Every structure is written in C-alpha cells, then in structure tokens.
Length: 124
Image 1 (cartoon, rainbow, N blue to C red):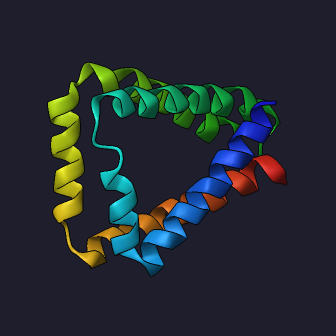
Image 2 (cartoon, rainbow, N blue to C red):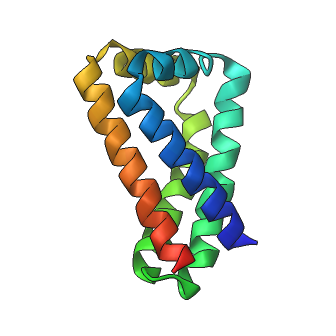
C-alpha cells in the first residue's frame, strides 16, 4: 500500500511540476486556491500520510536511507504546517506567488525531477 501512495503522489508531483514549468500562471491560480484556514489543515494531512508512506516504502526501494529521511522530514512538515499558523502560511504562499516565472519554473522543474526520483526509487 505504501508503494502505491508514493507512486500516486510522485505522479502528481511530476504533473504539477511540469504544469509549473510550462504554465507558471496556471500553477499560481492553483496555489491561490489553497489560501484558506480549512485548506491549511487539508494540506497538512496528506503530507503526514505521504511521509509515512515514504518511510514504509523505504526498505524495498532503491534508496532506502533517502526515503526514510524524506519520509521523516515530510511527516515533520505535515505536523509543523498547522502549528505555524494561517498568517505565516499565507505569507509564505504570497511570497512564493510574487516571485518571477523563472523562479517558479526552476522550482517546478525540481519538483518534477524529485517526483521522477521517487518513482525510480519505488518502481525499479
């Protein structure tokens, strides 16, 4: 089950990453939709689940140590996200949205590459 969660989220990461590379304005519209208090909690829960999936998928992967570390970091990020508060969460999103297209494209290329790395790690 953990492998399937990692695969699904990785495919989503690649899709979002490529969308941001090709159409950063479209990605910005998507990100703006996450600027509400309830969605802050909705953003935290999948991080915790994904982090746990990375942790449990790690032993059978091509990069067990990397997946364990990433899993722990992702769970911590999911726990910290609601604790940091809505105002700070919104400030980070707004800061990210104010950066130029090159910034967005660079980060989204990295996100797509990261998703491909995770796919490689759990599928092969």
